[in-house]
Image 1 (tube, one colour):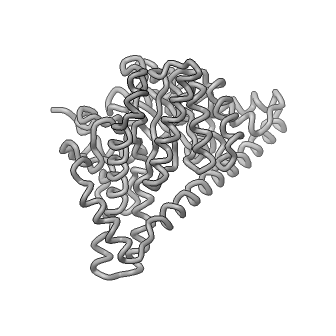
Image 2 (cartoon, rainbow, N blue to C red):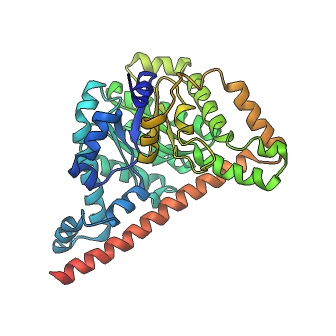
Image 3 (tube, rainbow, N blue to C red):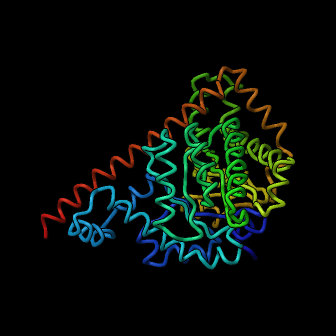
Length: 371
């Protein structure tokens, strides 16, 4: 009898863990998730690193070493995060080899304070890629308007990219355009397109959190009946966009040159509302060729009691459109919600990064004093 996570993999979904820490690497718990729960990749973000670095003593020796060397706060964080990601890349190297680089991927995000700085993002992406120095790393770039050009430029250098913080269908179309433009430039630059990989991280549960709040405020039976439906509808329509834009003549020309499609990745898949099934954003977003990056709690729930019934996306587009139309009729503005979520998402990552800077500054000062 196969496990739900094996069934999910068999249905064409790549399971990635949305977490990383030195402890996971050194204790073997991450290796165990690869072996037992079909985990074939890892994503990180500023909040994850903040939690990892401040949670215990795993990084004390590194911080002490950096303090003795007179390293800056930024250099210390860069050393810690890139080392963890490089080590995770080594752990996932067999998966990457077995899948020709499609899976076995580990993501590291550019400094979130650069989200509105195109040139700064490009420089940071190159710097991270060079320091990690692993074929299976993905450089994470937020899908801000300023980020789109950076995505294209980074891919044009032959660097694989995870585009993050996508909330709207319109922005997702722009992301796919930026991806295909990047591959076209990479081809001109002489890069092997079959070696360049990308995912587009489309956020799910946060859409429900914001829209449900607005539906509750409206309070009518019609409004309350729509709660918990927007996140899935939005993601399913994103998959429709993916199907459409990777079936064009433009894409066919790139595919002939060895290019692989940018896979949709479902992010923010932990359920925020306890009234909903804890596997909602996993079992209801199954289609071949997608990635689902899960916090460990969601992964454990899926492994324990997830009911995988095959493809739950294709064929749902009419219903999904009806859901978004119904929300607009109630006065819930889709464009307003997705713009707010992008701003809040970036603000959260910047706040986590600033907290991390402060915490590491204190740890470096304490280490210098102790020595």
